[in-house]
Image (tube, rainbow, N blue to C red; front, side):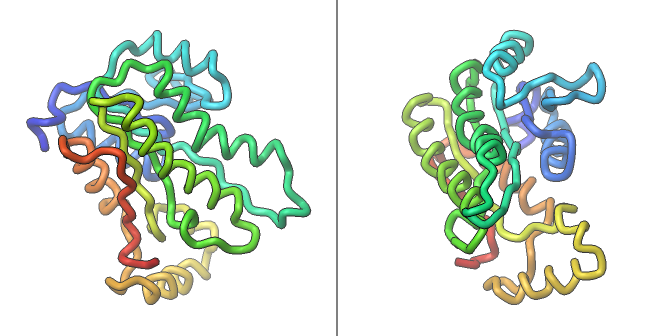
Length: 222
């Protein structure tokens, strides 16, 4: 894997926190030259890129030039009963997961791979989760379509299950019980870790015969 990624150029969209930050650090440890983007950069080392704004995406692509690999972890979580839906929030979620990746494919010169993030909610419909489910499902189809559109560049998606990435810390004292219950519903008896996601990303980036697929990393939960 080191030989594959050494000296390659990599952009991680949404790489400033949680999974994105861990992926960026791991890719850099493999010897790649990594750029991290954010819609609101904290410092000059980050690339400004707002998936809701095509001009921003185009400007970022011009600034960074050709890259070997692009990974987009961007997402916008939104849940509400359908009668209380806020259209602007849904449009932001679609921009992060669906139209945003299309803009990345349009404007960036990607030489080797594009990796997107879906999620298990796409295959587990529940009341109130339609926005997340629909956008995650669209990512799986986007990987198939963009793999054909950008060939021979490889395009894939990862669909994580319940991952202890820090996302659930807001549950406070209830977090442990939540993760234990989630683990009991998998075939492996545990929830995922950040390292599980990082390992999958590194493999996808180097898997030369794998494209147009969605890798479901959910411990066998269906």
